[in-house]
Image (tube, rainbow, N blue to C red; front, side):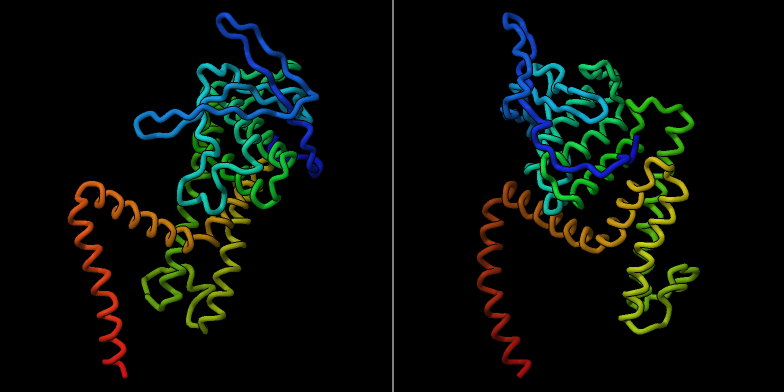
Length: 309
């Protein structure tokens, strides 16, 4: 199930306290539909990676599957909260009002690739259905429309590339992998070619010249933006299937429109990582360079002002 039949309205009371699963020497604490959800996390750092364990379960009453309790086993469950690359946290932060929904999703697909999660009502929840639950649960938690569709689309693309826990045939799994991968490659390639065309860097057989070409810069930008929306929509509608094409459209358009922003953020993030590692490995040299830079910058500024006058 890829797209909900009706718009989902915010219903925060669908989340409630899931109690605690039974462990050695401790009986189960059953879920309480009348109590607010309690998110109790314990931080662990393994190999420099931050992970969290949940001390209590989250309960969610899904519109199609009924009651869902996660994690299945609190003793073994680990989460990194909202799974998003560091350079995209400006768009989707690690925590926020979407956190209960992302923890719910992590619990449904944990352990990775295991398709055997069963709801209280006996429904088997596979990964595509878990992705749909994530989207609806974010709506119930009060997540804004654009953010929840961005998150769902990104998660759905990861599901297509991975293929685990979906119940798809091998042929369908590989079809979706190729579609998702080729969509990203085509959009990145066209984005680079369109950028070269915008700056009048000519290369042979550049298809973006059809809508960019030798026009004024304003017209080229408008045409490029139109293509950045139209091409991903066409690719998604033709190849992503009736249940997942909206995910393909959202991912494709977002990648096209935010391509240059993403490259800039990646460059800044990479520069920061280089500086951070340098200051840790050679702290004295880093201090000397910082002092030189603080002295040289104002001197250069004064010289530049005097010379250009």
